Image (tube, rainbow, N blue to C red; front, side, top):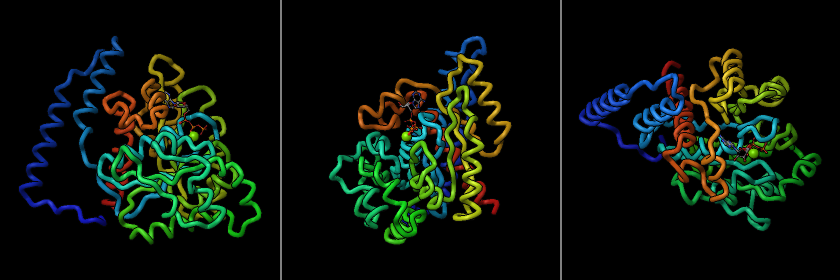
Amino acid sequence: MGDGLPIPNSDDVSRETSTAAAISALADALPPGDNDSPLAQAVAEDARKRITLVGRTFPRPRHTRILTVANQKGGVGKTTTTVNVAAALAQAGARVLVVDLDPQGNASTALGIDHHADIPSIYDVLVDGRPLTDVVQPCPDVPGLFCAPATIDLAGAEIELVSLVARETRLNKAITAYLDDTGGESVDYVVIDCPPSLGLLTINAFVAAREVFIPIQCEYYALEGLSQLLNNIDLIRSHLNPGLHVSSILLTMFDGRTRLAAQVADEVRQHFPQETFRAVIPRSVRISEAPSHGQTVMTYDPNSSGALSYLEAAAEMAERAARQEETR
Ligand code: ATP
Ligand code: MG
């Protein structure tokens, strides 16, 4: 795509194939982990992910994928998922834009992006029609990762938008113009972090995106409210954005010691077998510490089980779509 990836010759291809075979043999040689010892199992699992995933390049999509990370339930891991999946994709060779659409500005903080009140932000884009290029900043730690930050101003946008023309489609217009400006092809993913509500900001995200990515926390009440979210997505599909669909569901904050977490995971997989990723994000102290250092866990502690799980989720996201593109 876009900025001229080198075309491999047949020597490169055969070398790549034999390296892939060697890596997979090495991963297979790992002991399976003892069912009676969850810790040993977790260590073996992390080693497998490190060997098979770290340092790899993922397939880039043919066209820019625009995803909205949404769940009107608060604190389920929307922002954490947005920034870590985005960072993992960028580290694996993609160009990724994160749009922070939450007045809390948590995604901007986690990406180390300045977002105090005077910084040009997504508020200016939505309310004043400023071009997205004016507000996008590169993420300091991860090449290829960019962010349109949110400032506290955005808290007022929900009300200010009500009286504006084309209030539901303003983000869509801004992203389309941005992709046209940047040649489109050079941005692989736009990932939009939504607030925990179904107001005009979230509606703008649903209209701008093609895919919905739902993080689900593996706890009691996890599925409550999900049907409301799916109904809203149906409504947007029938009135404003016919291409919108739920493409990805990720189980987050999984605690392997509780039976409840496993039950929730099973239930989600039963309802959404195609959409739910195999990768599951464990509850991890490193994941929750990273934002206070202005970092994603992908740079804060790349070898931690949290970072490796987000890397696995990003790989699935890229590879699943690449397989679908091939069969089309
Ligand atoms: P909101 O609805 O307020 O926007 P959210 O859905 O974006 O919340 P996050 O902010 O990503 O949720 O996560 C909520 C809290 O849980 C944060 O403090 C975050 O650091 C923590 N957290 C997220 N994922 C994990 C995890 N896998 N392990 C431990 N802590 C986590
Ligand atoms: Mg959030």
